[in-house]
Amino acid sequence: MEIVILVVVIALVAVGLISGLVVGSRKKKKLPPEAPSSTPTLTAPPAEPHVGDEAEAPRDEPRRTIEEVGLPDGTETPVAVEAAPPAPAIEIPEPSAGRLIRLRARLARSQNSLGKGLLTLLSREHLDEETWEEIEETLLIADVGVAPTQELVERLRERVRVLGTRTPEELRALLKEELVHLLGTDFDRAVKTESGLDTPAVVMVVGVNGTGKTTTTGKLARVLIADGRSVVLGAADTFRAAAADQLQTWGERVGARTVRGPEGGDPASIAFDAVKEGIAEGADVVLIDTAGRLHTKTGLMDELGKVKRVVEKHGPLDEVLLVLDATTGQNGLVQARVFAEVVDITGIVLTKLDGTAKGGIVIAVQRELGVPVKLVGLGEGADDLAPFEPEAFVTALIGD
Image (cartoon, rainbow, N blue to C red; front, side, top):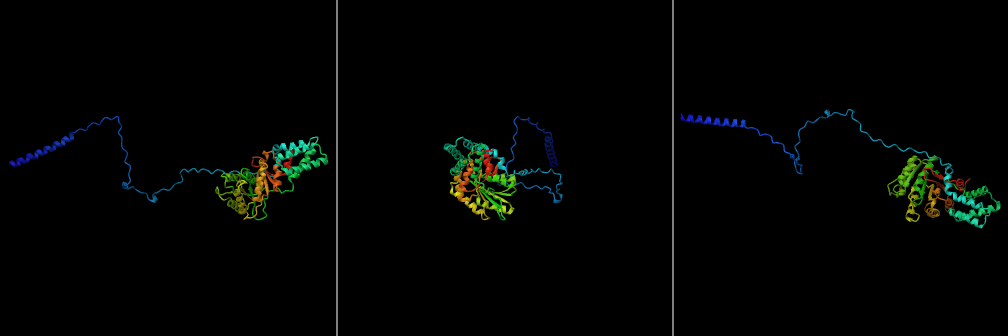
């Protein structure tokens, strides 16, 4: 009996203890929140993964099938495409016929001292020995050359003595006639643009540095195109960085294609390719611009001979034009002699003739090489390269 009572007491005590714990936990109050601190709490950034860390296990996400992927409906905003720059307009050069006559005033201004000086001396009342010496000196200063000057003075003295020419009009006519005779009227001054074969005429332009060869080549293309010829340009000047770009710009202005190669490339190879392209296109003329050569550098001059030989594998060269700066005077004759030894010069181009009073270089260089002056440059304009006409040139010297 006592044992039963003891078990009942122990059970009641146990139930009481359990009830107290439950009630205590329910009566426990939550702590009030802490007042915010003036110092912000810094949150550390997530740690960067390091080499060797395992990647996160891929999560299962729903994937769309091909059938569920929608195609563009054509309503998207089109992406703006930058328009290509318009091609440069093709220029139509003015006809070359009569161009020197139109530029006569520009030539006359630079040569005024020569023509007026000669007429003033010839108009003296007494043409004594001293006067004839002054006439001779005037011609030499104008770079006519010693032999042509002596020839001209002798002919003038004889005609004045025999004819008794004294009036200004008669003296002007006499001087004009003798100067035209000295320049020569029997030269063929036309630039050859017909090869006589099924291939284009090939014109090579040579000269020393600084004479304006590339510009002259571009202007010559304009002259030929103005006369109805189709032209291909060969940029065989690979030593001057801007030469090919410059020539190509000249060509684009008149619709002539330029064949070029890498900077520092083989000039002979480019010249060969230019003629090849000219044949393929059926062009009338191929103009080859060569690098400027110092006439004192044997190696460079030999290379010019190589260009000539390579080009002639297609056929003979029809023209080799030597570009001379008229302002260099007698030094230009030294250059002319050396170039003539390397390549067969067939014509002369005198540039900057409007910027010098030494127009007599036209007579001197023809006498030196035995080849005609075919073109003259009379300014910086694109159409200031003109076919040389002796009568128009002399008229510009001494006036009408």
